[in-house]
Amino acid sequence: LDLISQVEPRVAEAVRQELQDQRESLKLIASENYASPAVLAAMGNWLSDKYAEGTIGRRFYAGCRNVDTVEQIAADHATALFGAAHAYVQPHSGIDANLVAFWAVLAQRVEAPALARAQARHVNDLSDSDWEDLRRDLGNQRMLGMSLDAGGHLTHGFRPNISGKMFHQASYGTDPATGLLDYDQVRAQAREFRPLILIAGYSAYPRKINFRVMREIADEVGATLMVDMAHFAGLVAGKVFTGDYDPIPHAHIVTTTTHKTLRGPRGGMVLCQSELAEQVDRGCPMVLGGPLPHVMAAKAVALAEARTPDFARYAQAVVANAQALAEGLRRRNVTLVTGGTDNHLVLLDVSPFGLTGRQAEAALLDAGVVTNRNAIPRDPAGAWYTSGIRLGTPALTTRGLNQADMDRIAHLIHTVLAGTQPATTPDGKPSPAKYTLDAKVRDQVSEEAADL
Ligand code: PLP
Image 1 (cartoon, rainbow, N blue to C red):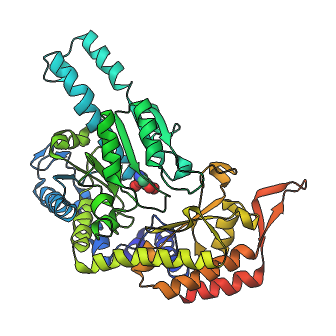
Image 2: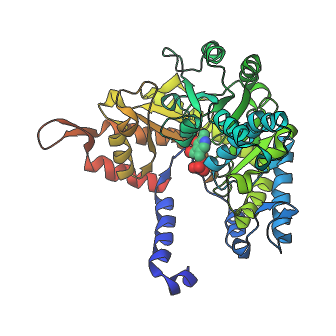
Image 3: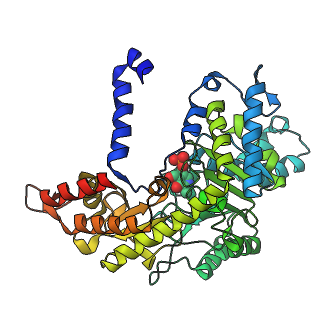
């Protein structure tokens, strides 16, 4: 920090403040974690200065031997950890990983057959009319993913996102009675919609997904099964999700972030079967610019950590803690989407407290409990204000908190929600954003939150 301070003290101060904030509050954001000092150190060094477009051993720049080394180590750890045929560790984020995967599937299933038909080796060799046909075909493909309000991600075909513009999209939801994924419904939609890509994965679905069944559905309609395990990669790595719930043996292609349950640096990764490897490796320069060698080094370190028995114990504890948190809330009569959890996240419906997700999120933050608002299935308050709060245990489990602590946290969350009143706008209408939180409740909860 001294070095940074000498150049730009305001940045040093923001970093110091971030550390203090993270120490004094309860980090319950399901997509966040604490990377280890080894991971942080692997990111802050001279590898950051290097350009290395291309892939291992085939770069568009000279002097890449050390980048080749770290990229290969990260890919080797990833394939060994997940039992995947191929790993591509360059994506800068989860969204980038998904874009790489989309283009790999389009290249395999649309571009390659078009080139073969035209007896061309490369798009540059196509005639103008063949090229026009190819562009039309690339832009005319279909994707089926989980809807945003059921817990899917923006990149799974949400219309305002690039994925919803690249593909004709449709989405599957959850059963209104149970909140659970209804595989028969997904199958019926897939039969009718006939997607090129069927996506499974989520940001806010608190249950396991049966990937064997999803693969059966994909096979029946001729779709490529893509699984986005951004949220639960750490649970796959730690062998909490095995058999039908492990996406690797079932999906054609799997994407992930590396910074959530996997506890690495911010970044993305693609794992795939051998048939897609060549197309996936074209991610740079197809979709990505120069890779981030320092982040690939940090991925290598995080993946090495994830191969240890300690990490498997951590992954088990993440789920045990989420279940204890869910149980603590349920006992206090808080409504949970699907009634509980099988993974690292818990989704609350805060509307019985008369609150929107936005009000609840802000009140909890005032009391030192950091969460995020989230839509619940068929949310009447919409995607901005929402009726839900998403909680996750990956970060607090890294800090060593246990199931008894989770019960205390359930008590704190319930106390804040019960102590928060919705407020009105100046013209007397109910406001979806304003609220009042009892000051005594706020002070008492923030003191306890800092203590934990
Ligand atoms: N996919 C899923 C399922 C996610 O939850 C997220 C992040 O929230 C992403 C992709 C995107 O990751 P990133 O923020 O690294 O682009």
